[in-house]
Structures are given as structure tokens and as C-alpha cells.
Length: 218
Image 1: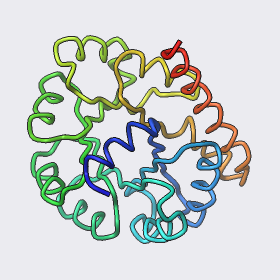
Image 2 (image 1 turned 90 degrees about the horizontal axis):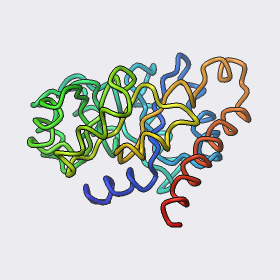
Image 3 (image 1 turned 45 degrees about the horizontal axis):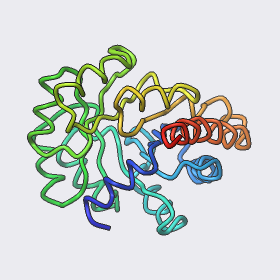
């Protein structure tokens, strides 16, 4: 899949599930649970033990059905390792020019983290495909509307503050996709192996977004 196709798929899938786990052995079950609920884009963070080894297994299990990226990337070396392991896109909580340029040289999407209007636009100018606004709960939804007014070309993805029921509101304010972590991948549910409830969370999230999209067509 080409770079622009992956970007379009992220936007089409609209939800990026940010997965942080203490036990990597539960990763497959977590992904199966949220996939069953309709979530098809996964960000495995490097904070997950043996994250890159798990990524390879995950891609083999879900061949062609999901997009799998790597998050919490803080260096070029980490980006290289993630790409070598098969990451289809790279996400960082920070904006670091050399990471963005390296990922771009590999013709893969890069979603750097940014916070201020200047950081966001600088990332865009250097080729960021989607800018991850983080932590989005600090600036709030109206920040997106304000940023998009003078810079409508930006593709922005909030991470932090996105819940199962407010994702559509972020989209209405100008987000092209949403990153969601603990609200979807509830650690207590996972610790108790309650994957059916994780699936219900995913369905609630996707139903909210589907209702919003349907309202735009009417």
C-alpha cells in the first residue's frame, strides 16, 4: 500500500486505537476484541514489552485487514526499528524534524505530535501526513475549529481526551481522525480478560461515529 493510500485509509477508518499493555501476550486478544467492534487501525506503542516482535505476529494474523502502526517513537533509531518490523505508519508524541524526515524518506506516513499552532504548521511544512495534537484534552475541541479556520489544509488527529461518546464532536470541530487509548482499551477489563466488554466499547465508539457521518449526508 502506498503512502497516500495508508493516509486515506487512516482517515477512512477514522479511529486509531492506541494500545498500551503491561502484558504483550494479551495483545492479539485485545486487537481481536476491538476489531470485532469495528476498529481497524492500531497503534502499538513502544511502551508495550516486546512491541516490535508483537507487531510482526499481529500483521501475520490479520493480513490485509487492519493497519498497524507504531507509536511513542522518540528517535530515528526507534523509527527505523519499527519500520523494519513492518510498521505501516509512525506516531510520536513529539515533533522531531529528523524523525519526520526519516519516515518520509521511507515513503511511509508520519504523525508527529504537536501542540501549538506554530508547531503544528511547522510539522505540516516538513511533510507530516497527519499531525497528532497532543495532549488534546488540554486545548479542547474548539482549538481544532480555531486552527482549521486559517489553515483548512491541515489534517489533525486529537489524542488525549477522546472518549467513546465524544469522538464525533472532535470530528465536527475539524479532526480528520481520532486517537483513543484507555477509554477504548480499558486496562481493568484487560486484566480481567473481559474482552467482550472491550468489543462493546469499540462498537459504542464506532456507532457514535457512524451516526455522525449519517447526519452529514442528510
